[in-house]
Image (cartoon, rainbow, N blue to C red; front, side):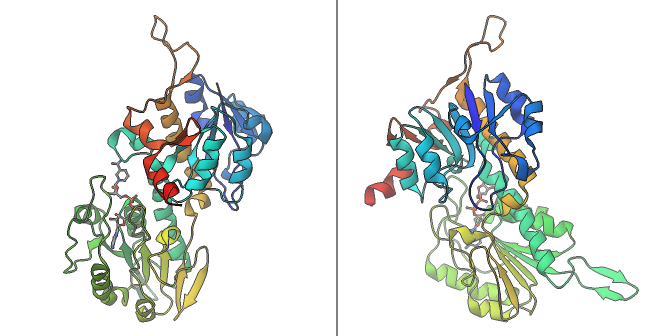
Length: 393
Ligand SMILES: NC(=O)c1ccc[n+]([C@@H]2O[C@H](COP(=O)([O-])OP(=O)(O)OC[C@H]3O[C@@H](n4cnc5c(N)ncnc54)[C@H](O)[C@@H]3O)[C@@H](O)[C@H]2O)c1
């Protein structure tokens, strides 16, 4: 069974889906890996490093002949190049990658029409058993870290408090709104740089995690009734809640040097938590990094992939931060994909317990992980959450 690794074609995408370090594990699964020439170059993995790890290097056409295709951006998550990839797919082939299935159902539909199976990495359930396949968390970790670094590089001040012969430098004040995976990593990174960090999240369960990272929890007289769903995600609140949240945060925002926003509700537009009036109240030179930009943004002035300066405040809306740390992003993603492959590719064991048989795809819909990630099968979009918006169209 062959696993193909194409070069990513989305503009500015520097990650690669499989790195040489996971090839021995894939070999044990019975998978022969064929990598497109130059696929790992921009992430720091030259062709020679794959060849050394027993992969072959070939053309894009050769790669797309493999039984399984592993991509960072599969059709759906690659508006510019996804259609060309879909045209190369064949009946029974399996594609694994981010696929933006809940908003780009049409792209999944076209994959289904080719008879191919699509596994969307966004749909890996957030259960303990699937933690090592959770690429959303891996990428959010990187985004949270990098958001702090770009904020620090943009801010005309330093982060740490310094007592020097030339006087005392005060620590930067950082506010993190939304303390999920990205937010918690942003808190940890800002603390390491010596900033004074405050954070807020609607889910009360997060308070302890914020405190354990050495940040203060921003206490506000706000009652987020039923803030968390069964999956651990935030539930949407009504507009009056968000209005009150904005009013209460204004005082803090007005004395903050850096605001990093990550607040999101799965499947919904991100709530607006920073208004233009709040931006106007911030100290000149301060910085907002809006990580919710892909879901509409938490600041009403954010523009995707632009830095705008308004009332002396720099507002950044980076959409693909994980790709700016391509080496580790690819390493983490490749481990997530490899664990998923270990879950769905099986080999018969010989009497000595060694896996010797030919590898087989086992897509058992009784298994929660397989059922949740599989978007297309048998020529159809089978995932209920992806089918719903398609039926409405
Ligand atoms: N395998 C697992 O068990 C597993 C894996 C990953 C994540 N999780 C959990 O899932 C949860 C969400 O993860 P995520 O980072 O992907 O979330 P996310 O990207 O959907 O949202 C980011 C954060 O924004 C917060 N938020 C929403 N509205 C807000 C508002 N108005 N004000 C302030 N904050 C607001 C959310 O509570 C969340 O913490 C976390 O508890 C995380 O620990 C569990």
